[in-house]
Image (cartoon, rainbow, N blue to C red; front, top):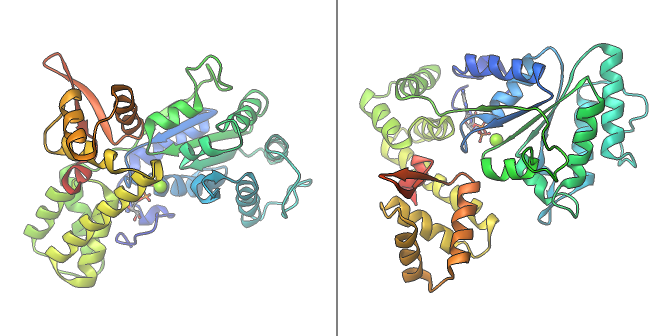
Length: 345
Ligand code: ADP
Ligand code: MG
């Protein structure tokens, strides 16, 4: 069902995305490391899950965020998730026990590679929400990256997929361009999942309503697409609420409210005192888009702040893909990446 709010897992539940799916599968097959990027709720988790089901390989899906405990990625929970998925696939790898394991990551990768070699099957390790790896271990996830680098250099049957919406954070973490980082200079391929264009968004909603035999005025669909743009996750939510309330306004209102609370909770995850982040986004959404003007706005609301600190806040928002810096008439201006964020903040 298109309006199912969970990530899709089967190809027949995925609307469109044929090309992206083929591109992702070919990338995973060809490159040792693939990065899948895209703003929140564009369907990254869905397309990963579907690709792992479709690909002629053994696909193991790991949600790094799910391994978080007390603000850190717990190595134990990560390994349990990995081993749990191995069990679910009913593959029996000698040497891998399914209880809490003394094996470290490199051992697990070694065993997976041997298994792949024996069966002549590629093993895909897909790490979703991979930007959370920076909370792994005591050195910002470096131990994990050392294991990945080791596998890259030694394991011809293993492929890595890293996905997340916070592009800058993910790049910083993986460190392909950082000469001191474990993965420096390694080859990878990057794919960005874009929101649907307008006509496809309209078709998506039509198709979703058709599935549940609901006759919805074209006008409602168009207004929803104008408001929510082509981000599939927001469209699904609107459709879901519409089906349950049979009320266009109510459905739109609920969707925007939920978007707002998601945004706020993500911002407060970044920092407990997140009002300044909210104020920055608010300023930009009002068209205040230059560094000094945004700073004035934020200071008027929350008191003075040093230039360095303010720059750091902007940089964080940029790395998390909330905002993007652009040149306009030779001047640096900021804009909000996701139009839904711009609307609700
Ligand atoms: P992301 O991982 O990028 O945040 P998800 O895969 O969780 O996005 O998708 C968000 C929501 O949108 C989910 O409800 C999912 O089912 C839905 N969705 C995303 N892409 C599609 C698609 N192509 N067809 C149908 N539903 C989709
Ligand atoms: Mg996701």
